[in-house]
Each structure stands twice: as structure tokens, then as C-alpha cells.
Length: 150
Image (cartoon, rainbow, N blue to C red; front, side, top):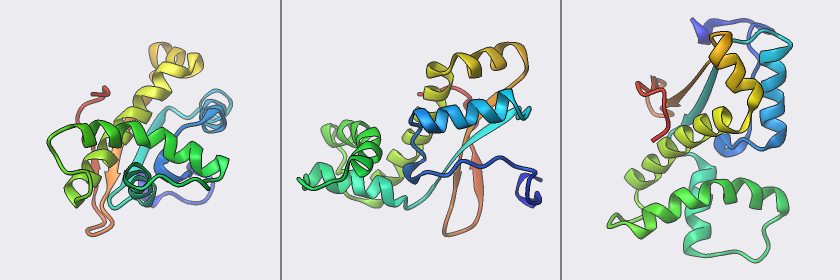
């Protein structure tokens, strides 16, 4: 049902790596407070280029990242570093997909944690914030069963 909507039926915020900076959080707050949105889906996707870029930065740090790129990669990098510190190799497809899912959960939790507006609407108005992952290969969207960040 969500994916069959027409122009103007959804309020969409797109950003590489589905990171949530102050502007993205404010945009979501606007959609909730002013436009009545009651469902926020943090939708990541398989084979995310921003996640792969964060892996590349951990492996081969660049001295010439713009502030904008640094912001995106910097938001994802801690998740890659945790994986890099574990027994798993951080450069395989499974590891990238693991970070994609962890990032979706992290951003879902961040929205709830960093926005008093969103928190209040969740507590009082039935707002839901959920994570989902879109498979570029199959076109299937998997909604996360857990509503909480890990």
C-alpha cells in the first residue's frame, strides 16, 4: 500500500546512507507536527554506496573529503569500526549488509532519542518509527520486526 501512493501522498526525505542530521530531523518533525504524518520509515537498501564508502574510509582514510561527505561517512563509520574490531572481516558483502541493517536501527533510535517532538508524538499521538531494508536485487522490502534499536 505504501509503495502505490501518488504524488503528494508521502513526505519523503532522501539522504545518502539514510543518516539523520539536524536538517533531516527537522524535516521529519515538520512532516509529523505540521502535516500529520504518523508513520516514519527509515528505509535503507542493500549494497548501500555510503556504507561501502565508510568501509573504504576505515580501510584507506582520505585526506580530501568534503565536509558534507565527512558528515555522512562519519555517521556510519562507528558501525564499521565496531565490525572491524570484531572477528568478522569488514570488507565482505555480509559485513556491508550487517552495517546497512545496523545503520537503519541506529537512525531509527536516533530519531526517537534526539527529537523531543518525535518522542512526544510517539508517546501521545501514536507516531511509529520503524526500520526497513529494500533489496536492490529482489525489490522486496523487509520491515524490521523489532521496533527498538539494538
